[in-house]
Image 1 (cartoon, rainbow, N blue to C red):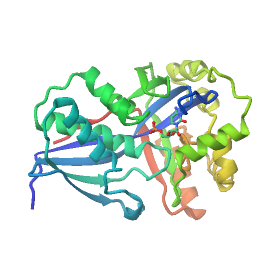
Image 2 (image 1 turned 90 degrees about the vertical axis):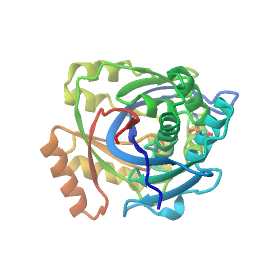
Image 3 (image 1 turned 120 degrees about the vertical axis):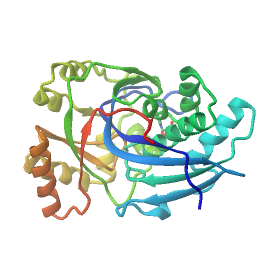
Image 4 (image 1 turned 45 degrees about the vertical axis):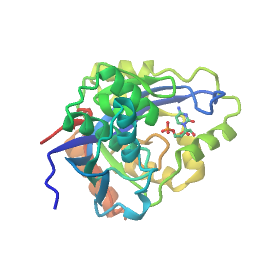
Length: 302
Ligand code: C5P
């Protein structure tokens, strides 16, 4: 058995504001978004090896079969990107412990990619600059740079251009994943069909940013916004019922996370989150995760 040299931890993300504009010529959508990293984590352990090896373990609410183990796996793509960048082979053994729901709108794959970039860099002491890591991350996916940065950050462009923002949190969240994931491209395509009049400039995140800086949870709850919520609920009407249920169970506000189908509820306190979570579980939702945010981006834990 391989003894791993270090472990890197990567948080899930949610979008507190997701303004989406009309699709660009390159197929991506212009975004004005506010990401927050929350305390649901994937851990990636790494050791030197003769060739790149990847094994995966998942939490009991995740279906391992939904996780690609081939070249499509973002962890393998991240290692390959580091090999190209540094012009050398970087054979490593990786073990992923996954708790972030799959295809859930919580950037689980992006978190793993960001973890792999950092893990390979630290294991081999490559001293990749932050700018280069962010550029490599952006090449792997729109959400990957945020996974490196963590905390609370505004994302523009296609979401890859991130800058930290003032956040007077912590905030308490309850996350309810679905057993069946939703494909991000499919939700964006449905957005295009439902919103042919979408403006070129996405809805501004300013209101949400002001609310975050005040520390007033009721203001943050009111300002939460997601332009992908309508298409996600149109594809999965039960998500609308879930939002209503969580709000009836005491959450200040429920919102689809990113492209869904995970729904997150903002609560007024730790006790409030516990009560909402208990209510949702009693109403038949088997997987209810409680989390706080903001938390650090990808970091070495051991
Ligand atoms: O960048 P990432 O690989 O995570 O994006 C996955 C898919 O989500 C893209 O191929 C595109 O269909 C959609 N997307 C988009 N606009 C964005 C980000 C993602 O249309 N800003």
